[in-house]
Image (cartoon, rainbow, N blue to C red; front, side):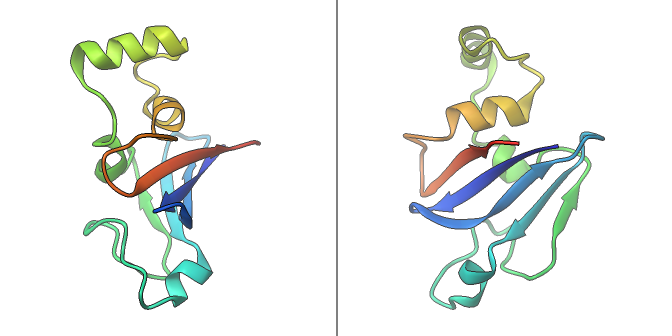
Length: 108
């Protein structure tokens, strides 16, 4: 299992988890959820206490990844299989993302 902290404008919004069976879950942080001034991170992941589950990386996070030749270059440079979307996300979405979301890998 691998996990990453999802930040919205530098504040912890939730935890993204890749489970050992290659499924994914996302749960909002309780403090973030309770603050009514804080927005949902994505229209596809509305603020809720429920844990969201998916058989593949949620499209919102997948769309933070590079495509095509840029994905291949990142994969080669980072020495991560280009099909390891979670691994690449954790390494490339820590800084300088478009928009307010950053993804920080958590040590296991």
